[in-house]
Image 1 (cartoon, rainbow, N blue to C red):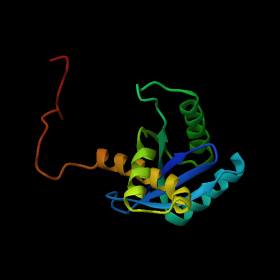
Image 2 (image 1 turned 90 degrees about the vertical axis):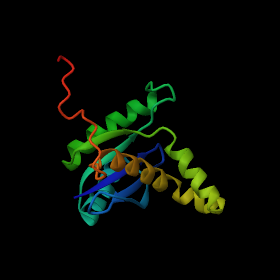
Image 3 (image 1 turned 60 degrees about the vertical axis):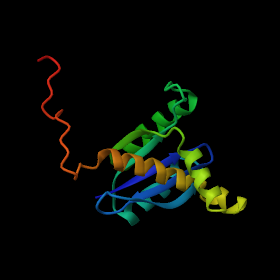
Image 4 (image 1 turned 30 degrees about the vertical axis):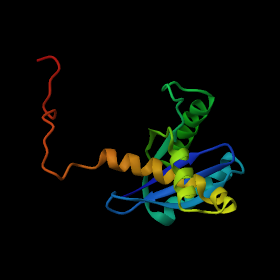
Length: 153
């Protein structure tokens, strides 16, 4: 069961995919946006190629947690994507994912031209990796004690 991470922008959509175990995210590609129909066709092709069963779509929240016009457009795209491709779409806070991607590329001394080519897919990788990490079952034996927590008790 693989998951796609998407960084949805006005000109491009960064795409990353999880490994089969859902442990790591890898950058896949950047889809150059053409039209909604064309974007969905390309994402559908990629879904089949990578055997994806779910999307994690970065939700661009403001630093104070509020939603602006980009978040509203992203929510609308999520609805269309889920309806058109028939796969579940989960929204994930993407604050600072692009900043982290830029920092990583700068630290790796990647040329400016190459950074422009891969920034969106690396941001998608950060979005997806954050989601994967948050949804990974604990394996360290630590029990939070909240599994049977009842706030009414």
